[in-house]
Picture 1: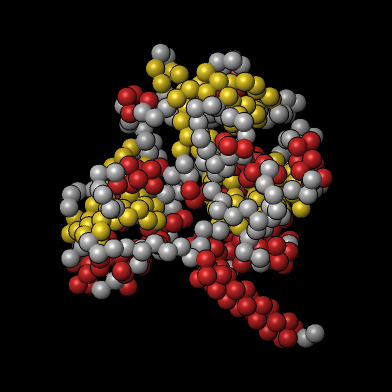
Picture 2: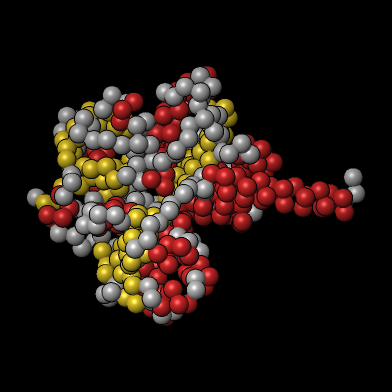
Length: 423
């Protein structure tokens, strides 16, 4: 085959892939209809905070519509009595996945409709980070700039400034049953598996457990951990976490991770609550699932693996997982081998970044297998990524963009098939 023909065939395959993804998204797109004169609460949320805040505020309305930011259509703007935006900031001042493209989408709305729009913006963030509420500020400024009518100044919710009474709202207790050090021989910070008796809690894979660590007779800021077990109704009231002992640049141990991995004794109670995270919940279990993670990010993957192991006619899972040292960081090898024998996991790629002569990262596996990735996802598959945003998360996103194309990846995001649990 000539080089010119190879290029033509490659382009044709790429176009066919994009068309297939677009048609698939159209067929499976959610219907989020709006009635005339209905208030709309739109949220952009990566980990569920903004969605939960929006949901709480809908309780004061009889007929409010709750909708992700990227599902808004011109009809929503024209029929809504008022619109309330609850938006988080993600990464380094970025929009959450379900808020991408929102600012540009405002250009497609008729100016007469925009200028009659009444709105509020509630921005969620953490003042410990430099880009505090950056996306929320951008949403407020752009809506005001194009002529929409603010009902109030922008409101801020600072995760670093909540009062103790607010912190305790909705929390309950769970007992630490067992804690296992998964890499005791490693020279790197320890990774621990925690089993909790959680009869008071209800969750789904993809949800977050918030833990309030004790700090000098009071509670510190809540810390969030990906739940590493199947849904509560399938797991006999036991909830699992994976927690890495955090070491600060000055050599100190992190408050919450030290409490969970070192000082909290088995049998003691933790102050916790579940935060629903719909963007990381899977609505289907019989379609292919590509799981990608590194380090403690294995937690977010385990819940979905276990869920499918307990579900009849579950679809295939391809697990790509990265750690440091193959000698000390081969976490849960017995469990993973068992799931392979059960055919729950159809393929497993474990890679190690500090393996002499064979260093590899999860994004390398993706880039080495572009056709296999496309073929695996072809039957309406989902992608789920869990781990560190700055390193693994961005590298994986870049690799998937190279393999699938920007428009196809955006279509997967819009159709709720590209899930990112990154921190």
